[in-house]
Image 1 (cartoon, rainbow, N blue to C red):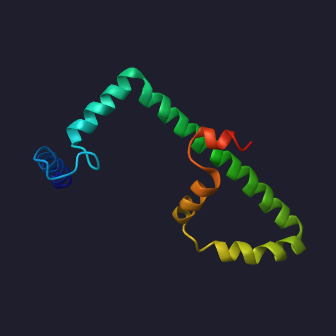
Image 2: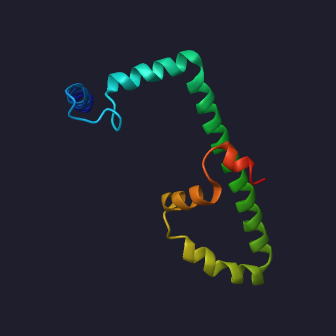
Length: 120
């Protein structure tokens, strides 16, 4: 119950600070503005379309990663020489946190469908 109360106090303080103009509304809009905008996007179908596109990208990315990862794992399991060649590279890249690859992925693949479809 205290965690819900703490979250409510946080939202109320945010709303008050945004309404008083102490927070830049462009950078951090008030919670009421966000709820209203989300409601508008839900009513006209825009939100569902964009959520569907995001889910599609996640599923396609996961499927591609699974296929490549499983294929590479099987091939490296069958061919010891190839495994000995690739293993140092894999072990060197393993400690890098997945989130650290995000900026590089944005640079390599771009953002949105136009950048993706123009390369293939």
